[in-house]
Each structure stands twice: as C-alpha cells, then as structure tokens.
Length: 439
Image (cartoon, rainbow, N blue to C red; front, side, top):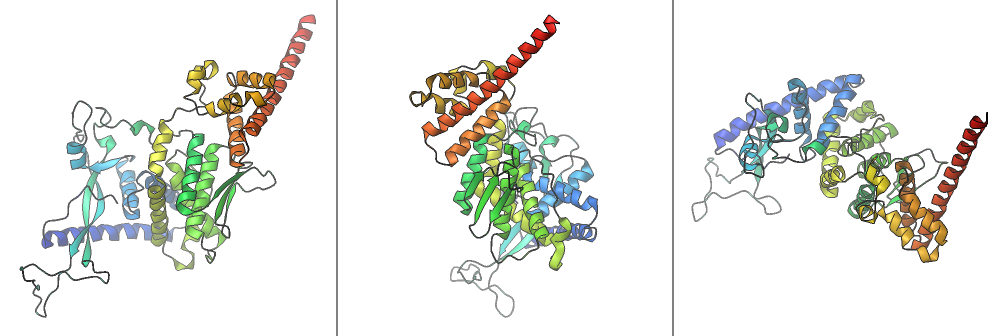
C-alpha cells in the first residue's frame, strides 16, 4: 500500500500496541477469505472476488489485504470507493485554485487500513543489554548483504473516501468525473500499451485478422509473444481486454515449465485482465474459474495475493493509471458530433483520424487524383462506424510495414467501394420513390 499517509509510532510500546491491532486485522481478513474458500462454488463468492478485483483496479498501489478489507468496509458502509487519503492529506495538503482547503464531512466514518512499520534490530549481550559503539550508539545487526537488520510491525491507519469530503464541490479534485466511467478506448492508447508491453516484458504484440481462428488472442509460450485476432476481438475495448488477458498469461504462466491446469491458467489470466481493463471502463464478462484457483491445495489467500501483486506490478511498470486518465480525458474521435460532419482542416488536426486524411493527402500525386479527392471529401461526412473501420485498416497497414503510397491506395480503394455502395443504395431508393409516385 502507499505508505506516505502515516508516520511510524514513536516508541517500542506504541509499536507493539499498533502491531497487535494490525495483526488482529490481518487475522480477521484472512478468516474472511477462508470463509470464501469454504464456499468456493457459491455465486456470491465469484461476485465478491469480481468486486474485489474492481477495487484492486482503483487502488492498484494498495496491497491485496487492504483492497480486500476496504471493499468489505465499503459494502458495510454502503459507500462506493473511488479515491482515498488520510485525514491529514485531505485537510492540509489538498486545496482548490483559490487556496480553499478540503474538509471532511461532519459525521464521516473513516475506513481502516493496514500499514507497515519498520524497527531496526540492535545487537545485545548475553544479559539482553544493547551493545554500544565508541560513540555510545546502539549497534545494528546486519543482514547478509550488509544492510541493517529490521523487523516489521503492522499498524492500523485510517483513510476517507473523496465522497466523504467537499473536494469535488470546491474544485480541489478535477479528474474525479472521469474515474469509473465507461469511456471508449482511443486507438492510440491501445497501440501505446502494446508498445509498452513489448518494451517492458519483451513480449512482442502482433495484430492480425484471421476469421478461421475462433480465438480472440493467444500467448505463445515458445515465442514469448502475444497475438490479437481482430477478426474475433473487433472493438478496441475488446482488443484491449484481450491484450490484458494474454499479458496475464505471459506474466503468470509464461514459463514453459508451468503445469497448471487450463482452467486455473484461464481463471488467473482473466482475473488479471478483469482488474487491468476495469481501469479503462471495461468490464469483462467471461468466467474466472474460481473453483480451480484452490486446486493443488493452494490457499485462496495466496492466489489472491499473487494476482494482486502482478496487477500492481503491471500498473506500475506500464504506468496504466496515467494512460487510463489520459484515455478518459481525450475527446472521443468517433462520438456523434456536429463538428465531425462540418470539420475543417483545423478541426481535423485535433482529431485522431487526421492520420487517415494526411495519409491520402500526402500521396495525391501517386494516386488516381479523382478517386483520392473523392475520398477526402468522403471523410468529411463519414459515419463513426466507417471511420472506425478505415482507422483499423490504416493501423493494420502500418503494422505490416507497408509504404505510405500503398497505405493510401488501400484507403482510397476502400472508400471508393463505400461510395459506390452508397450510390447504388441512393439510386435504388430514388427508383423506389419514382415507382411510388407513378403509381
């Protein structure tokens, strides 16, 4: 968990008292998870775990124990969680542009969380007295690597959700409206995540369209690569969810010696994808195969910790939080908007699909000029669905390393086909109207 909220207790007695409360809370959480394990077949168990995964996606830098416990408290208090911080952080560090500080709502009850405290272990003599150096300071015990030996304690801290404050009302937090909403995935975000996965985990990401293959994507353990099948995973949201699922396979089961059952691997990969995709407003509908999580006598709490750890690592290494916020703040290039019908070159420059326009316009001299100009005019009035299809085709051409001329030619041919289909429909409609009039 992020632990700049709290300071360590001042003395050994305080630490011992805090540690006692912390370990009691850990024991309580583990007991709750054990109860879930006893009811592993119950629909309520899967519901609870799905809700925990959503909580993990919002608080990816918190430990499994904390996200599980925060979710449980959220259910009891009937307060959906979206952004939490300590009393001190809300009231002393956060303010709006006019300098007005955030206040906690009167009567608000805090959420308890666990936080670690560390204490250096010092050398003692046979009588239990601390050994001192020549300056009278206690001498730390050393680890094998030469660092000071420490013991860990667990304290209990308290946080408040943003809904329990006036932070939104006074404008101290401006990005909250974008959190948790079902926002469309922007094309550039998908490509950026694929690039980061390749750079960070060294899993090349391939996009292809193979209607003969029923799989939406797969992870090749021999090649250590990910493939997304756009013939099955058609929407950008589906492709991103599939990408996270296959990344889960790569991280959790990429070792060729991994001998988990298919159900266990699919369940763990889907849990990973469920949490990662949720940050982008995508709710996966597939099975988690939760019953298989405890096969081979592995405790459920250990499975949850493993999934939580890898989700947290991926959020950190890929900086998914930054991309999710960036995605939510980007204007949707396919949203129904009058500007999309009446845009000028200046408006196009702000649009993701300017790439299509520039690709054709930049190769006018190499193309059938009449068809190319018709294609550019078509872009001014194309439907969101048509623009989506053209953009996917354009991205596939780039991934196949085709020249700009060939990319433009393919786009012009596809647009020309769409124009002819639209003309045929118009002629058919006119003929139909004429027949009705004559009748």
